[in-house]
Image: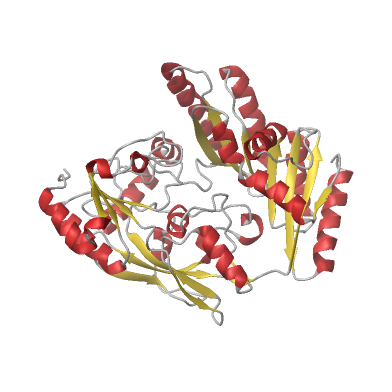
Length: 464
């Protein structure tokens, strides 16, 4: 179906991009064969590094004419194989497209290229007294990757997810045509929202080359509250009660003692409290000390009244660094504790979080495997990790298959979905098909065909 990349194709690519930006054979690092978790591997036939929309357009015209598959890659921090070139062909890296093009303080927008890192964008807008609210845990991910997976993160409880902050996109279609989707305007009721189809499509429909993102005025005050509980059930049950109090924290994270200890070992730094089994970490922000203090005190009193063992105010720089550096290191800390791991990124209704976590504990005992977890208690998005430890190849594969089957089935029973923010990619597509059924999958395949009739952009992902 797909044509192999030839020497003539390489010469055309070198003419478009320059020889230094076209790599083949041993010049391509093995890191480009996989993403962060590394469970899915395939080397590209050629790696290219693009810097402009026009370059991408010319590359795609070549790929379209020759029917060569193209996979787009940012920082490679994905966890489901979305940026792995499973059909070979061209791997297009966008990290050189890393310019912040405009900050429009009148319209509250910032325009960026897709290779800008989340941490770079966050720092830039904060320096200018603005906030870009989406806050995924992986700060070294690119904005293009965030948009492609509709990334959420810790502030989604109050502010929403990436989709809520994308005003407009410049994209290159599979045939090389350059198209503008959306606009800088705050409201848009002009036909189908093609922009929103692209958000979360994981590079299967078109290639994002520029994004207009909404920002908000930077809140003047931000404080965190660390609340220990005797067990996870008590911690999770506090969350709906917090919402019913009519106070909306910026973030509500849950974490277990075991996960915190992994982070302590990984970072070589102490967490403020590790003597209890379960914790929720909350953040509050606003424009006055009085407002934030009142919200925090009300939630602290509520938690203590329903069984919390204490409530630690995280107000000093030392405590903030201790708590949030640990939270940010959870994934890497768990990864460092085992030779290999894989992730189940599910989302369930907030009031079923404890039920799902208890299920994973029982599953760990049944399968005789470690299954640590952490996640966003405020929106029901859970990150659950299956650790290989000393399992041999055959037992590891069987354990993974069984655990994933049972966890996704449980999530569905609880009214949840197979992915909260990391996407479907290659790793989860069979679970998505099983959960959604024939008609929704056929609709997705129909959308893909309209955008990409030749199926050359990131093939074999999501719904194929």
